[in-house]
Image (cartoon, rainbow, N blue to C red; front, side):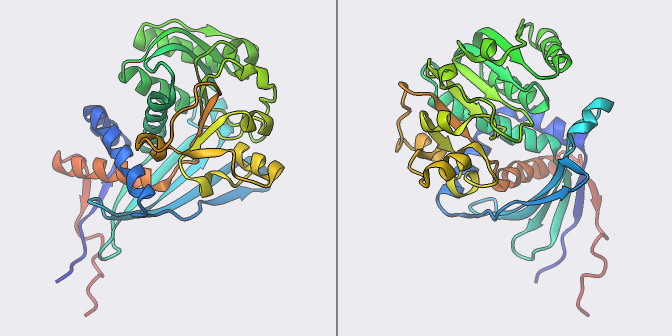
Length: 338
């Protein structure tokens, strides 16, 4: 006999505690989700965007998904991006994740998901950096866009024991870069140079992270990547199509990444072909694709909802086990048919 589940609410503080206590496990969780997706053991529809005519920079995105394997969860992440929040010291992004039981369809939990979203993004970036860099765990780092996603990504790189000889920061808002620099100094005892010009930040960096809110490409000079760096293109709309076409391009999912006027999508529009995409991160993980160290290697992850489900499912299980959720046993009090 099937019955309605106990519904759980998981706060942001509980999510932070679970992830902080299980950092090493986040990597196999994210990697497993990628492999399940590549094997066709997921359902990951297009994301849906709620946009505002009077606030063109703001949006709320719905990411529905299902993940199979041992996880067997469905759900949806509802994540907003309101860049103007930053002027009031309020985070640009906020999110919730609803997890559903894949047998009955009943919701299992509502989880504060801003850290889940940032964590899965950062962990996937760290996985890519490790596997497509010529000399992983060392070199020079450039961070373009110094907000929460960039900070989370660098934090996970440092957790994985990357040792950078030099760190350069570039942000259109210098105060943001200064806050990032202060965080590096206080949390990791690292110094960073703040560069007012993009060229000075990226020209010699072996690893470049783009984590901006750019809506149109602005990196049009192919010579900026002439030294063949590893580029983690989290914000998806920074690099010009001409530079994309001169690089080895690796994505998380080809169909998802080549839409919504991302840089790879613009390259497809310009050429009428997807042949410039070398493959996916799973192709690299499973040794079907070798990194080309003679070119810039650009990882452009669209951000798959199945990653949120995988991390969220892990968090929910751990939070329930530690008594860190708010359980609502009568949430579905009207579930019986008769």
